[in-house]
Image 1 (cartoon, rainbow, N blue to C red):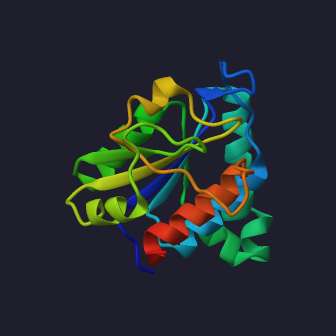
Image 2 (image 1 turned 30 degrees about the vertical axis):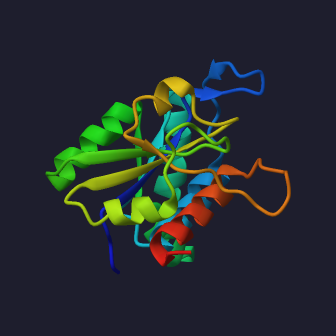
Length: 187
């Protein structure tokens, strides 16, 4: 399988609630499955799940272990391969540090948002940056999206995904799949 210098991070803290307040969100196991499956499909090198909550870390690790070492690994080897990409960390900084240690190169961080943000870049600009000698992490937020405090730490922010209507509140797993397809396949 072709792997590239692209990683994915799914943030559960800090994210926003519908009142535009920073919060921590609960893990959704279907996000783990679906984003891992999209990640392996598009050759992503690793998928980080970030949560500071011990009970959520335990849950994530139980799901991963079931599908990579338990009964699920025997029942569905394709799912095993996908979920082996997942790494759980308490902070985004821990994830970036882990990638730096693994790849021995700088890490470029790219936030996503359903809102158009000042200075956001188009997919085509990111595709050009992927040729750089660096690892790149596309950062997705749960709940109502990434908190500004996390977005502000990222090197870039991608333009939002817009459909043909005014509705713009995709599930994070749908957004991840669309972004990865556009980034890798140039659409």
